[in-house]
Length: 155
Image 1 (cartoon, rainbow, N blue to C red):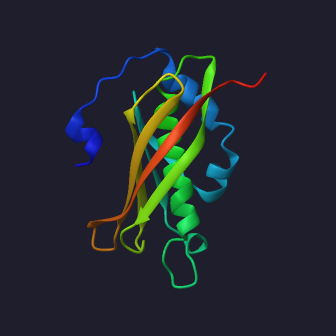
Image 2 (image 1 turned 30 degrees about the horizontal axis):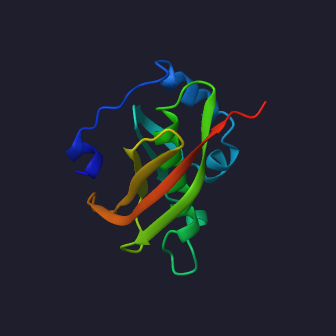
């Protein structure tokens, strides 16, 4: 159980059409598509995604590449903030801090991101990654914190 589930946070929804808006934004997430990461759950202030682990995702010691993990965390935390924004706003990452608890090795990566504290210009977010191992157990590999900055959507 992650912090989001423990807190059972209720957020003010500024755009009731947040889910379809996020799905439309995902159409332009070309790097996410390139690595094979897919969003699997969208809730107000919470986004989850997964990636089937392939050899191309690993570094030289056959563990998941740290940059791949950072990318997946950035995506779920950024989009968790995106779910709470009005239709004329977006977010960009202002700061991100990732801790690597265990080497990532397994069949599937699961990334979860949530808004810890929304603000008018800054959203404080948290995230975590687990890998599903060959025996079906999950191993926590990363925890992260990020600050997402609200911006006007470029015209």
